Length: 538
Ligand code: PHE
Figure 1 (spheres, rainbow, N blue to C red):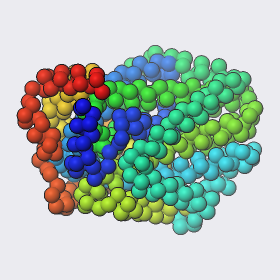
Figure 2: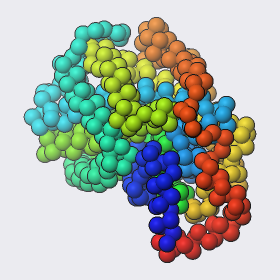
Figure 3: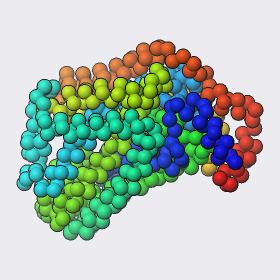
Figure 4: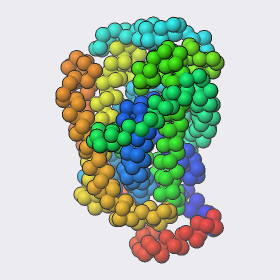
């Protein structure tokens, strides 16, 4: 009975027009699609290795439970209760807070511009793997023949080998996003996540069978307990969890706003959090098994061949593929996994922007998709398919992901907890359908401990960047694509927040039908108990 009632009300109210996930399963898979990305595969293994190896699992688990999951649930609660894109949800909480949402939208737009480029490289490398097109010197190939990278700076020399796959990535984005929340975003994840798990699982098995794999795992998991005393190790754990779970970007707010009212958001958050970390651990095993093989083949120590990011994917892996039995298969699985993991994350970043545009302007899905994807694609093609793409990418990535995201995350948590005092209402909201219930501990974490932890990460990063120029890049590059960009975004965001909402937008509190339901049914405990029994019957 309840299922029909809930389904019917979802049809008639505003969200029918915004789009919705057809089921909790699709929502969970879309969330996992966003969370599992390049960061899981090329960032986690090295962060763990660098920060205490096996001992890192302790700060990592603490960060997951004390910062990651509470923050994920906060994002879910905001989106699910206020049923809007990031700016609309914040505006409904408190009109003056709308700018926080646009700040996140701005960052997502920028991240999308370069994230797409890495996927395009991986796409190209998937095919390169088949005949090991990089030859015997993958490093020279990557920077020279492939990217044609010159000196750090900005040039207009287009590299067709990057331009074409990048255009393909953007074409795919337009197609998927124009199809809408369920048929585009949802179905892509429903299909892509199982394929990704199978492909990556096969890669891990193949890597574990390589000679020397064990020494790689020993290097990864050998615990260095003394590292636990270092603040930077804890900061690394928080930073990794945060980036990896895609929290604080407005993504999880947006996705949660597409979930039917009567769903268990708390349980969903736990599933997403643990799935993401499981994938991350699996990636650590696969990557270090392969690095162990590489070390043995070249007679070096694992520590000398270990790396992360671009170096791991586009230099170390090609070297491994050159040497390993069944190299082309390994390459296909590795780069194919990067492409799939990256695409579902890119979809989620762009959805934040599209959703905000649709809420604000009342455009159709297709118009909004074109309006967002076309400029992002043009910018991306202009900046990143040239010989200087890699430097712009590296600078923007470093600054946006450190300062931009962490600052908006800390500020928004403090505003929600202390400015708007929204946590009790959000906790009640989660507890109506969610199990386990969240309570004082959750409010303590989201209101105090998580922002404090994130501030620590921010301060340590700032100390490094003020101490030395990042990667020794020229100052003007760091200022333009780093500091200035980070500082301009909140200004632009609060200007966007001054534009009027489209006619008929409900502000001031959750959408009217939910507010009405709450007014008639103020006893959440009773409501929760009643829903719980119904839930069992569904
Ligand atoms: N969570 C993604 C990953 O682990 C990265 C990401 C961050 C994607 C922010 C979208 C937005 O790679």
